[in-house]
Length: 351
Ligand SMILES: Nc1ncnc2c1ncn2[C@@H]1O[C@H](COP(=O)(O)OP(=O)(O)OP(=O)(O)O)[C@@H](O)[C@H]1O
Ligand SMILES: [Mg+2]
Image (tube, rainbow, N blue to C red; front, side, top):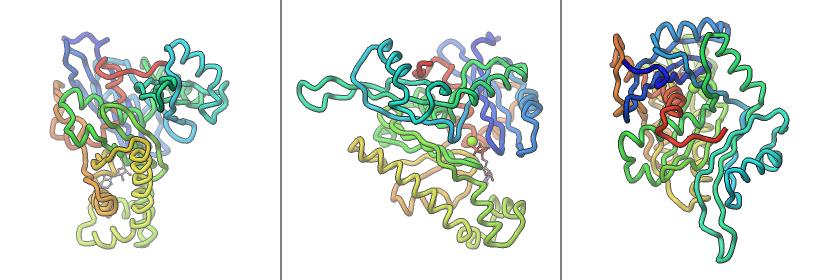
């Protein structure tokens, strides 16, 4: 049997579904040993729902990684003079306000050195690229306390948009990235309340941000335009049948807004790196809407398709419905990425 301290549950507390994936390290392998999903509403009691997720998943461990997101979480990619990790820590501790527009005394900070950058001119000091993440301290502390109250052992609190990148990093250890993926992939996780965009190229994080547009906005637009209640709009969104044209028209402006945000992120990356990116991988529950990849492909003239981050991952879990798991795959990217961080397979940020 596996030792439980080799297992960890990635717990994605989404606004419409809680999702959990358990990963277990077995010798050199990473194995998915459990998964669960539970629909939630704003009225749901978080503690009870987390308990239910753990019951459904029948996980072997209580070690858990969860994430914060939203406006109180800010990420910045910066160039800094090359320095030791001690110097970097000092610099970020004492000069945090130079990098993040957050009050240092109320900010939990985390960073990762992404790599060296060739000197801009001969004789210029060498530089390195660093991603710095700040989150409101109370947001992180409250989540960790919540998890402890649920009888769990939080081993890390991450950020949704970075978990998305980590899901891709884990997948890249299972199968070498295709040449177009090496050049650049825009990972786009469209949830209910938000969209996480993470651009990865050459095995390294390039740019990450969160946009407050998601499936709820599609549903609200359908409800307004077709004058139907929200629950009917939700059903129409998922299964439009012969009303597909009307649904597509109704979501048009939200879709354009979201497409524009993806475009801005890709533009930014291409401008910074002088590279080109032609691959968009969609995850999250809203990636199931066929109008999403269609609009991205047509407007951005890049390939856009749904991505299943579980592809190639070994699964060993008693009583687990593998078909159910694979169907849920695209919506499990964040949960998987949260657990992936603890597998020792991908570089960790320094706390
Ligand atoms: N077949 C479908 N077609 C379109 N949208 C769908 C479909 N199935 C689910 N959705 C939408 O997916 C969303 C839920 O996805 P997901 O579980 O990724 O969200 P979440 O993680 O809970 O949200 P967030 O990350 O914004 O907090 C809902 O808005 C739901 O309406
Ligand atoms: Mg989500």
